[in-house]
Image (tube, rainbow, N blue to C red; front, side):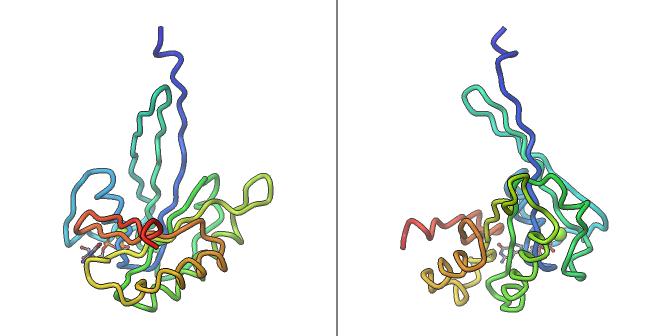
Length: 171
Ligand code: GDP
Ligand code: MG
């Protein structure tokens, strides 16, 4: 029947960035529509599945959350393997987490490459935008940062207030 015509896709998507920036909160919000102030820092690998049904296609996004290894500032090749996209998250209230974004991007690009030699699509997320916008209020600077460091784009997010401000459209 029609069911057999559905195309199924499974994509591994990485969510990386420093400890406490809100990676787990963003995933919980996106997948389970919930928010809490204390997620225990699980040790090891954690992932959540977001299923998207489009016309004739089902997309399963497997969101990989790093848990407990953030302090090393890097992950293994094996962890990154076969990911098709990544979110690198920073906390707009903590400049050091923004500085760390470059380190995370370099770590990712040095260990994972598509078959055509390109790096995987990576989006920058400026999280906790409910707390202020000092770090991102210069959208042009952020756009240039993305160009300079190979991000496909950036968004302000708040796992707390369920916001994903489309700053790119406003500029
Ligand atoms: P992770 O270590 O990157 O996984 O960060 P968590 O998701 O555990 O979040 C760390 C802390 O920041 C928790 O207390 C969260 O409740 C809080 N948090 C996460 N996202 C937001 C947000 O968008 N706004 C605010 N105000 N707090 C957040
Ligand atoms: Mg976490």
